[in-house]
Length: 337
Image (cartoon, rainbow, N blue to C red; front, top):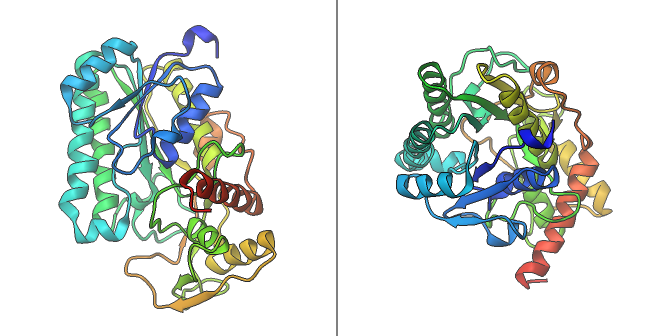
């Protein structure tokens, strides 16, 4: 892609985990970038020097209009939202507000300002409990929690908006995102995170006493849940390539899975953490959590066929190593080492 095609990009939620890695990927590739984040779960330290931060909410139409005008925004990468599945069950209206209503406001602001390209952070939770694995994009979408439903509703809004207006979009359905920037510039920083590799790294660095294993009686090789773990930097790279694809073919929109197409069980992940750290984590076996499928593994055929995405970190030990490196750096940043 030539430099002239690198349009100004606004990243929503760019101070958060995945959003900050997308900002790094864009900056590293020479794209003009700005961030909007209300810092409810994001961190200023995650934003690289020189990237403008607008502290505010994506529901604020006047602020968005000002940002678009000041930055000359031609593309949006939308990561802002709420992501904790059990919380979505307990507080569904929060999720429909943060993930659906606010996304509608952002899409409307983009249409009003004539912003032509939109990348959306979606999720494999849109599939619910699939009957087949690996999972292709075309299987039935039957989310089993408000988080998945709130994201699927935004996908529908984008499809309908793209049919009616001069905007194209790409919805990327993530599987289990893990790891951290290889240069330790950013990583998963949220307190109380529920992601397995993050929890295991906290246990390995003395921040937790044990790791809970939820369910040991699944129909899987070792009885624990199987997931497709994708390195956050590979995921960020996919966003940049997806944006290039939208710019190259303005009348095309895309929906693609983001995963490696290979699953690891909970016990395999914990064995890998033990291997990387040369220690033994304290594991506590607990009952299944409601709504957890036995296996969630992506079929990445479409993304591989559509964009020139070549993952660089598709190695479980490497993912864990980068996550551990960030966990130690995070202790230094916060002064709790």
